[in-house]
Image 1 (cartoon, rainbow, N blue to C red):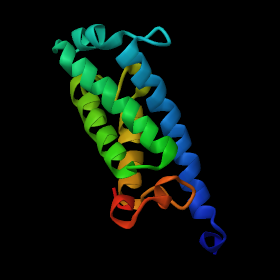
Image 2 (image 1 turned 90 degrees about the vertical axis):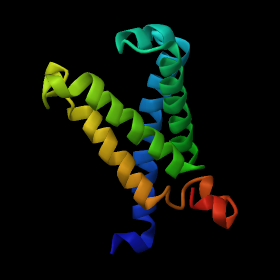
Image 3 (image 1 turned 45 degrees about the vertical axis):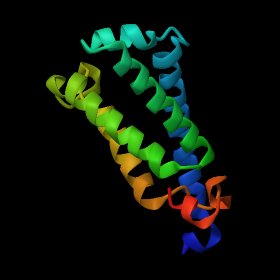
Length: 139
C-alpha cells in the first residue's frame, strides 16, 4: 500500500544518505587522513599490506559514498562496499566474533547486507542516477 505513494523510494533515499555519510567519512579518513584518520599508508600498515591497498580501499569507500549520495552508478558503489566489507570482516573483525563492542563483525556485516540490498534494488526514484540514459541507469 505505501509503495504507491513513493514511500519505498523515500526509504531507499534515507538508507543511501546514511550509508553515504558513513563511507564518505571513512573513505576520507583512509584516503586523505581527514578526521584524524590514518591515511593510506598507516591504514595499510594496520593490515600488514602495501600502501596501494590502503589507497584502493580509501578510494573504493569514497567513491561508494559518492555513488550512494547521488544514486549515480549505485550498483558499482554497492559492489565496492561489498568487497571492502568482505575484506574488513575477513582481515579485521571475524577473529573477534560477532559482538561489535569486542571488535566483532556485527557492523561490517550490517553494511555488507545493506550494500547487497542496494545492489539488488537500485537507488530508487529520488536519485540523480534515475535521470541517466537507460543502460547507465542499471549500473
